[in-house]
Amino acid sequence: GECKWTRKQMEGNVLSDLERFKIPAMRQAGIRFAKGGPQLLLFSRSGFKHALYKASEERDDIRLVDVEEVVAGLTAADE
Image (cartoon, rainbow, N blue to C red; front, top):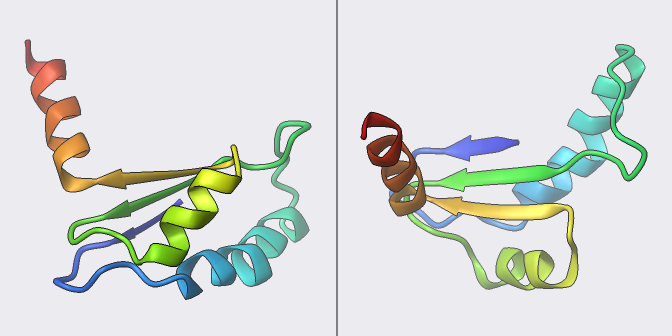
């Protein structure tokens, strides 16, 4: 996954970088993924650009997590 804690929406290049550089580096390091490949969770404080929303709608392996979902998860864990 990838997390950005900035005031700008997450750009599509974050997904490209994960797929082109980080995931291959993990495979090269011997990290194994499930048969279907890795699940990509992108966390953003300020939301996501349209290209990422489109990618997440078209693909089952991408999940966009905004700050509200993170806070809701933390709040539920405290209950």
